Image 1 (cartoon, rainbow, N blue to C red):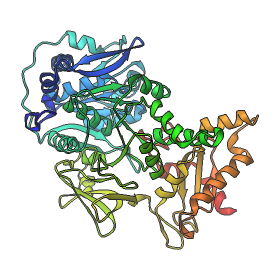
Image 2 (spheres, rainbow, N blue to C red):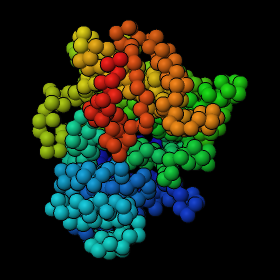
Image 3 (cartoon, rainbow, N blue to C red):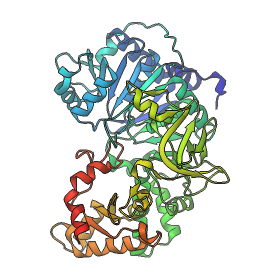
Image 4 (cartoon, helix red, strand yellow):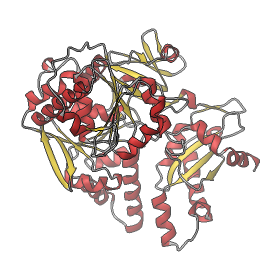
Length: 549
């Protein structure tokens, strides 16, 4: 791995530095016309320069905000690095966002240019264009004919030369809009110095290096995926983009055979649930199942990273036994992705690891996790009140509850805003029991209810694959969620989960909902976190009935 002293202080120089350092090594791999195609670091650097020159010809200058609305694909990466090289500010927009949500992010950030992927995204921009007076340029990656819209290839073709832009490390590199579980999304401003601090910290813990392959299916609009992208390029590894079909991920893993896999817990939970079912049904031994899992994920993974939600220790133990160590990490957008992580040689199941180098964590008197370091963001865009509530005396107030053990491992115990206070005054943290229920192959989501109520109840959604298989095997017509046998299964799961908690913390009753929560209904954020207030509003009648029993 190259000396860290040679790395650029800002992301503006990353593409050229990586091109000069790793030149002929493969930087990107992606599917094109059904085949895997590679681009070298030298080719990546040249393409970034070409796109930067094209954007400059379109009028993008230092400090301009440029919105990126696209799925995880090489063009997203190239555009992001090109924007940085101009000293402009990238504004990621989730491809699942509605037209209204797109309007909020583009309008609030003051973006003057939008780069989107395809016709459907253009339709969303067109629907709100009149409300975006600062938006002057719309560019589309795919070939789409639309008046007043240029394709990315057109922009590159019209490019000239662009001089080197000197970028101050303390200026904004990106404005990332949080998921907004409790209100409108807030724009987190992250500087080049923030990125440098996080990258330097991560690279002291990761095993990623030249010759390694990292498979990415997570949305690049999420900071975790962008951190993976940048770490890959600094280490000289190869970033492999999934083909766009989430159902094909396992098949692609077998083809690609990555050495590193970043993922949210759900991928590992689903795999574990399927394996456990196979052990119960066919008599497969645990050792045989572990070998099957290792093969299904490509056979070469030596480091997997997970975050964004808790994962059960027994799942981590199972995968470790499969030769696939999963390192649970913790962070947030405001901390430039990561705060702490388990890492090779330093693992404690149930914890989110030790703080990364250069990052200080302390626990406030009320149990809140506080963070300080150069990775901590300077504030929210155009939102001084929210900034003042989050940054106090140099400490980032995460809103998470936690504890640090005698060896320095951080444990997250809940979310301050999620605490349930029952009518009897008992404080409950719902995340732990909810997560226990989600470990079952039958459960897609579980939400505990009980604030200002006499006791906790839960709303349960079922895994559609599992219930569909069960309905077929048992020749059951109609909605499986309404079948008595399914209710009995959930009752047994709940009884087992409740045993781990004191009586006041146990869920007394539950309702099985006919469909899972979704981003489209507003019940989940784009990163699949539950919006409790929305769910309670949507299912208020169901909740009331649970308390009338």
